[in-house]
Image (cartoon, one colour):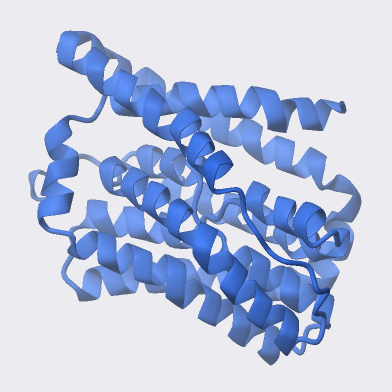
Length: 294
């Protein structure tokens, strides 16, 4: 196992789980029940993630006349849900963490069923039908969500319930730790994709950059158009543009058995960490406003 693999397969999941525990210490049960009672923000976020993102990816593949392999690779990325990294970025940006976690969990489960449908269409449309049945592991996906996200957050919420003062004291250190983990993840992505970054940027650098900017921009605009507050708008923006690159690579290399199809994910990973970092810089130090609490 290489150093990059050790970082991505062992260190990062453990680190992200610790960060999720810290996020849990900033949350109470009413944060989630409030979202469920008024699900407009969830519906907007899921629409962006599950419908708008694949449409934009498909449109860019056609507009840039990508070769079939790169086009399908872009579609693989466009069908993937957000991941724990989106929750991390949302925390540093002072977005609605409960909304971010809820969108990640729901979209991850729904995507298990939508990805095979969309990718079967993409493989047929772009002329690269491999005849492979696309089946994603439902149980493994749920276990991953539980292990890295839901269980640590639940433990953090339990700690806050037992010791609110400790939870409040840990808020700033955990936000700092989130920033450090974000940087480590970015370095790991660079290391893991070092050999194909040049090719990725040449072949699909511009389309993947546009995919990231357009999805984030539309996420923010639709949230504000439907009069969501800034915290919710930040969460939807991040969830719209930060994809589960690990899942995309697994689909390309393991399920479809085509390493080249993972090239768009390598390019996109760089862009999403750059734009995510910009969002963290823009929103991370802003003061909390009472009007954003709802």
